[in-house]
Image (tube, rainbow, N blue to C red):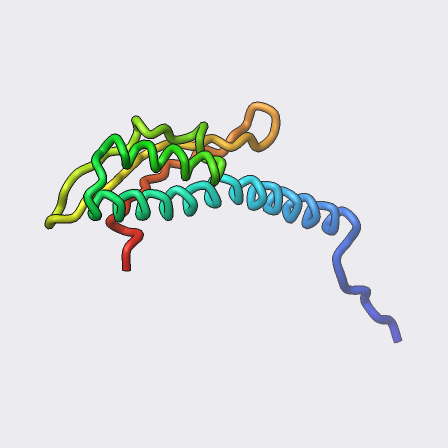
Length: 122
């Protein structure tokens, strides 16, 4: 009785491995920008809370700079990029920015983020 062999060939295994490696590369390159975004979202919420407690705009900007330095966000978003406004008696702090993450050679991933204190509160 003859049995047919089943399974994946060597070429197929290499192809699947390359696809998996590419997906892992993209996934690992996305970690940095998203970690930075979530830290920025948290900081913006804290700065808005300070504004609700009576801090001036310049004090909120200095607070942001200190917190951003601690969380290593100091190069991406500057305090001058923050937009302050009042909505319903509460201070809302927002910032929009683009972050590029190098992938391979001259290929980069581009992320457009918008962090707001309005969305960070529960």
